[in-house]
Length: 230
Image 1 (tube, rainbow, N blue to C red):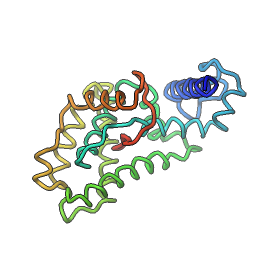
Image 2 (image 1 turned 180 degrees about the vertical axis):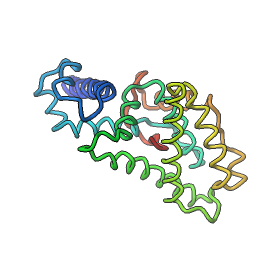
Image 3 (image 1 turned 60 degrees about the vertical axis):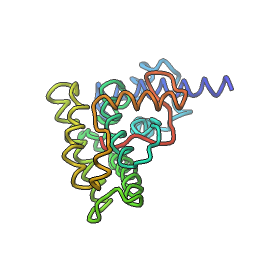
Image 4 (image 1 turned 90 degrees about the vertical axis):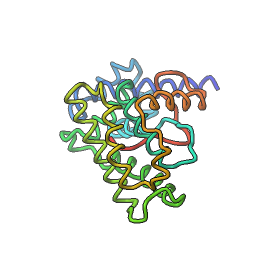
């Protein structure tokens, strides 16, 4: 058990170091040597967990979807929660910021960035599909098109917030996005019950960590994953 816990900690240390180097240098310029120096681990330890720089990038991508959120009876509320929590984590967690930076790094020509958007898209398709099955969506709503629009909308909103104020107002911008987005897809009775507030992000994130028995800062994989876009 102690060995397993040590391996988990080492993997986390490597991911955090890779995220920092990717964020500072960009994927293409970052080197394994720089990541090793930042992590303070041996080359053998790094390659035990990750076979290449691209695998490190995939690990950073996956971190954006790793948080467990408390399940809700409304799947649209889960969709809102995932977006609000992601906005909160983008402001507070370097690993999550790095995952977004990698996904939007147009200079990373040798990195398949489509997998990041694919993961976010698939998560939203699943949640919207469940919402439709529960009768929460208006009849005209196309699940795949709506999921794609949400990913694109969130990506643009977070980028604008980053450029304007280093994402300090990101939760509020995401609330505004949902306030405009949801009336076009949600059944009115469901829409009226949704909690779309800045304060909800921290509350739901804390509940998810408590549910998972997670320590503060970075969260562990779990049942309901947060994803609305980059």
